[in-house]
Image (tube, rainbow, N blue to C red):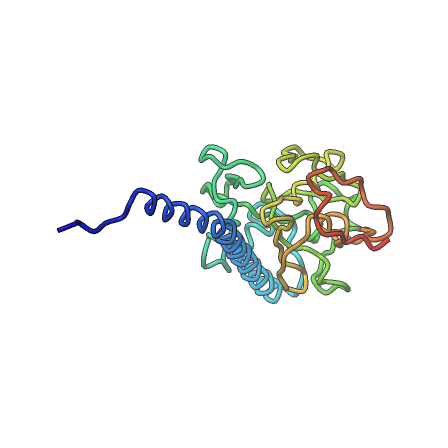
Length: 252
């Protein structure tokens, strides 16, 4: 009796078909994965919007004194947090020492005596005052009861957890991992919010307690980061090559 089985040619044909199917399916699966992580990140921002809403409701809708520290946004939010994983964008969970690289990199920060990881950040302009810098007092939001609250970011994907001061004149990052770890307005800190973690988008929560994706060309140049911001009333910057194909938001 003859044994039944595959011939070599038949086996090669099957392997070729499987390889073809995998080449078709892998990009689709990767896209589904990316979409799922983006949805999770927006969900994190919705939770942050709820945290900020609860804190402000308990404190007369007055913003905290600073972005960082125990009395700033970072500190005052802790009692309202049930899940500390909310500090991490699902695309940026590892620090540099753990193998993370910008823009997919979390930062270590000290919080109430413990080292925590974060890949989101509050900015200084959503505060009631900044100790030692009275010149900034006129541009701080101070209260959440403002016009166009849906365009004022509270917290968003960022390479630093606090003390970030976006300005409309900040230049875009020259490349994806171009970040600013120093301080001062002249250093172009706005680029720290232009983190390409979601295919041309980051995610954020806003002063009206909404949450959504933020286009990278929208981030620093089309949102209302402080009271003297002028989005839409100045020409956009010269976009670097890596940003040119992203969605436009220019309103000038």
